[in-house]
Amino acid sequence: NDNTVTVIPGDGIGPDIVDATVRVLKALDCGLEFEYAIAGQTALDQGLDLVPEDTLATLKRNRLALKGPITTPVGGGFTSVNVTLRKTFDLFANVRPALSIPGVKSRYDNVDIITIRENIEGIYSGLGQTVSDDGETAELRSRITRTESERLLRFAYETAVKQGRKKVTVVHKANIMKSTSGLFLDVARKVREDYPQLEHEEMIVDATAMQLAMNPHRFDVIVTTNLFGDILSDLCAGLIGGLGVAPGANIGEHGGLFEAVHGSAPDIAGKGIANPTAIILAGAMMLDYMELHDKAKRLRDTVRDVVGKGEVVTPDLGGRASTTEFTDELIRHLTQ
Ligand code: NAI
Ligand code: MG
Image (cartoon, rainbow, N blue to C red; front, side):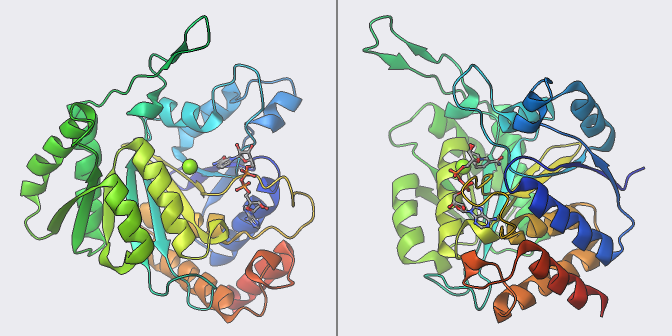
């Protein structure tokens, strides 16, 4: 069934916000089926692998996943669940929209930036990570390939066109990292020739950070390599009121994994006050990915409406509602 979604509740606040998302998706009535699976600390506690076989199997079957945040176990030689899933399912693009919600306190209004980050290569690929025996010298290698860069850049330009965007900014550091960043930029210059309808821009990463802080409205779509994208997309989340409202999607050629940008928030876990907005908006991204655009829009509009009014919102947004009360309010709006 093409409408079955693997649901990984995750750790900490994960189960609460994922449950909220599933309730909201059910209320939207889009014919989805949900198949639950576990990963992370929850799996370790049951004596299973960090990403158990059964979980991999359901992901392979459904190729669509809604995932709660996973607590990264401290110590031990664990590879991260997120990196494992990205590599296993070849989720090469990380898409992070930062769209202001009117009414949410933030530094700027009307920010609307999508960051598209390469998700597999670069300095995060974990290649050649060594520390010398005397502990004095550490090394790490970065690898960028033409094939992967081209796949990612094409995806970014296609996304820009599909979403009716006007400008794509390629962020790099090719002046210093002439080999890796230089190759990425070189591929960008070739690929963008196929997109004459878009405005093109190149910007060095440090200058980009400053421009984002001072003048975010000049940006539309940002496309960049793994590390730069990780940092800049968090910066963008900060521009629109922070982690509680920032969704993300990991996209491959054969599927997608949708999640919040934030982590498992151990400091508020179990208190019933986590804000599910970010992962619910990730749910809307999933509906768009499934071409259920009307449902996606309806969900997004409802979230923006309720969150923007600020009457029934969770404490992180200055309200007093519990996760459940906020979710009930969303469902009331969706079903009235
Ligand atoms: P975090 O994002 O969990 O929390 C940072 C701060 O934001 C905390 O004060 C938290 O209470 C608050 N916060 C985050 N999400 C919230 C929400 N939905 N509603 C209300 N408040 C919220 O970051 P932290 O504490 O650095 O990481 C905790 C754990 O999560 C770590 O083990 C980390 O590795 C993991 N993590 C997992 C991610 C994933 O699975 N995608 C992403 C980021 C972190
Ligand atoms: Mg990050």
